[in-house]
Amino acid sequence: MQLESHIERITKTADILNESILSLDTDINAAKYRGDLLLKVALAYYIQDDMDKAHSFIAQAKQMPGMKGMFREMLDFWEKILNDGNSFETSLGAMNVLQRLVFEIMFYYSAVLYHELPQEIREAVSCVSHGNTTFLSRGMYKNKVVPQLAPGFDVNEGLFYFDISGRRLYYAANEAREVAFAHNFIQNNEQVPHSPHLYFTEDFCPRAGDVFCDIGAGEANASFAQVDVCDKIYIFEGDAKWEKPLAATFAPYMDKVTFVHKMVSDAPDDDVVTLDDYFGEAKVDFLKMDVEGYELRVLLGAEGLLAANKKIKLCVCTYHKGEDVNEIKSFLEARGFTCEFSEGFMVFADDEMFHEGSDPAYPYFRRGLIRAWRE
Image (cartoon, rainbow, N blue to C red; front, side):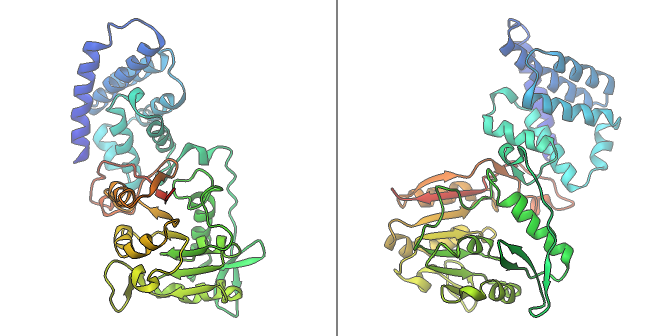
């Protein structure tokens, strides 16, 4: 159980802080560390179900000079938990899987020296303290307006769609509510400025005349956004449910869009293709990959393509597996690419480690995607 190790770390950290920090001068910096200590002591009493002392130490922490901003949000989170009046074990037992995930993440980062965490991690923790469990980037929630759009229905195609600037983006789902949720989730969370899952930025996107390759397209919102810019688009999507919606969406662009209804990997098969086998050394300017954890295998099957296109740009998702960040970054850097990550972090709550009956596991935060190019 992950909490057991977190509880042990709470105790050890509190002991160390107690010895080294309580004697510090009462300046603002020392006060921040005292706040850290008081929070850990409060949680230690919470674990022991001594709610009065837990409340007392949280209150003391909030009175320390400088206890504002993101650390104050952490204190507010635990004060709310304590105000529910439930014991530690009772609280855990009443939580659903996402509530448990939030609890464990907050507990983990309360067990370390918060004020020594990198700023980006503290911002991610702040997002979690407000109940966000997927996209952790404070920038994307500032002054955020969230329009909830309803889909139209094309009786001729038998498909739901959304009208975007006079063009129709079709979906595969059969129920309006399911379609609305998927579309609004993408438009209001996944593909907004500062999102960890944002494919394109003003400085990193396909340019006029480019050949764009969309690997793991789904409804192909990435291709839809670039279809008027690029000279040619290749859409790779192996799930048969998307064939009809994709054909309807891109019917006005069939002169420049090619569908490849196969999965992409590093070993060809009846339903699988490699990029090297498909393209050879043909011109490709921009690759986008979102293939549920198979990104590295797609790259392994694209060695020749990457070598032939020296100025190719890549946008590769890295959140599906815990090891993807380091492995994909190392792969690309070894082949001469400069790499940068998208803003913030993601929590991949669909991973098997977050299913009912299993404990979430550290590391909780994962980078959303990596952008790569050659100078």
